[in-house]
Image (tube, rainbow, N blue to C red):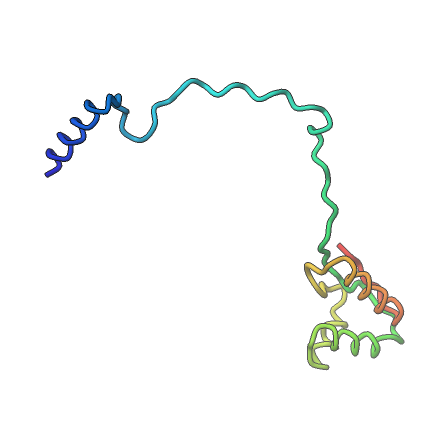
Length: 120
C-alpha cells in the first residue's frame, strides 16, 4: 500500500513539475540577511515601571499593637489569634502582587496606626 502511494506521489510530482524535496521539511535556502545595526536609542532597554508590589510589615509601635492586629485581621481575613501571631512575627510579608495605588493606601493606613510597612 505504501508503494502505491509513493508511485502515485511520484506521478503527481512529474506531472506538476515539482522538484523532489529532502525528508523532514523544506530545503535550506539562502542564508537570511544580517540584521541591521541597532541604534543606540533602541540598544538600551527601557525600564518598565513596576506596577505590582509586595507589602511587608516591618515593625510597629508597642502601644499600637491592638490597632495593628485589628487592621491586619480585617485586611487579610485572618482570625484574631492568627492576626496576633502574624503581627508578633514581624517583619513578615503581608501581601504580594498588590497594585501601586492599593499598596499606598495600605501603607498610609498602617502608618497612621503606628506600623511600619515597606513596599518592595
